Structure formats: C-alpha cells, structure tokens
Figure 1 (spheres, helix red, strand yellow):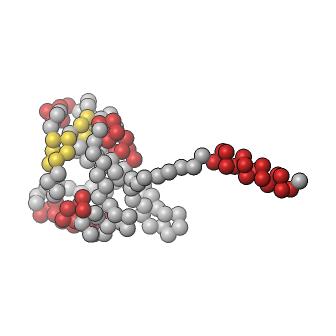
Figure 2: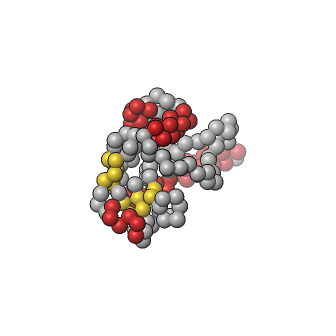
Length: 152
C-alpha cells in the first residue's frame, strides 16, 4: 500500500503495516511520489508482480514481489481461497466478498488501457517471469560474413 509523501491525510501511517481484508496478508505502507493523491482515496494497492509501475515502486521500497497468477490465467496458491479460479471469475468473487464483508465503499468506472494479444485479442496480464536475451551483433556479423563468402 502506498500514498504520496505530500498527502497529509496519511502521514499517520508511516511505518505501519496494513492487512488485506480478504487474504489476511500484511503489507508495509510506503510513501511514493508516483501515487496520485487526487485519484480515488489517494492510496494505491501496490502489486509489483503484475504492474510495471508498481514493479518500480516495489524496487524503490524493497517490497515483496508476489505473483498470484499461473501461466494459464488462473489464480495460484498465493491467492489463497481464490486458488484455481479464472482471473475474471476471481475479480467477480473478490468484489462479492468485499461487499459481503462491508469493505467496499463504491465502484467507479475509469478509463484505462488493457493490453491485448496481437494474434487472438485476449487480455494480456502483466506477469513476471525469468527472461533471457541473446547479443545478436556478433552472430549477425558472422552470418553476414558467411553469406558474403558463399556468394563469392
């Protein structure tokens, strides 16, 4: 959880930990310039494993990176009682559970862009995974050289 350091409403939360109402997981409360005090409550639920901006906040504040998705878009063991649910069904269930517990004040629509797969047009979920990269310069030089030598 995070608030803008200039937002006076949350100065009293410095150094505290907040408990997620549905999972019981405790999260540190941090202050970060990225948080817009004018948006919603002015508090941001930081999810470093599933949002590139939150990932940067997490790096700045050494926050745990907790992935809650399986590769197939279902919720993994980190999602506790939501494990096995499809991501869309999980979102509906979370809203129901928040309402039932009296933890949901209101729902507001706001515009945002959801990434889509260029082939099948399904929603793409940000997901941290190990990646590797190949330096191509040397390989390309050798390939070009081989092609040129073969032409001569």
